[in-house]
Length: 108
Image 1 (tube, rainbow, N blue to C red):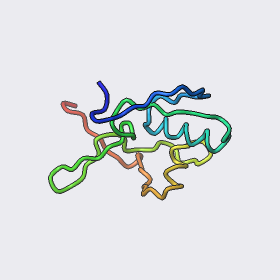
Image 2: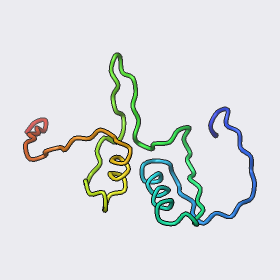
Image 3: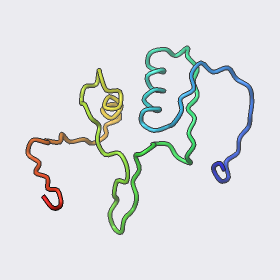
Image 4: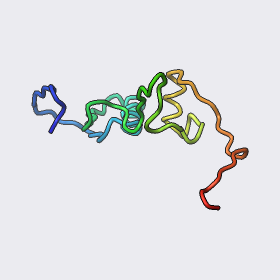
């Protein structure tokens, strides 16, 4: 398998870190390496034809729906590199108030 139409050129390099997956964790890991030590070489390996991991949107009729990850848990930019990236790039966010949510289970 492989990505249809993808071309690879194999050369030998020494890499300090291999990041497996280009989802948010992989992208955040690469960002942190860049931020803290530009002398560390790394490669991000992704098995899909796109980056983003579980985050993806899809057209559904006349609207766009989210198929994957929808929440960032934790809003501390010092403890959550994903939230820090969202803030850095101006992604829209809203605080979810779980105290006012009522849920129902079928049959109960």
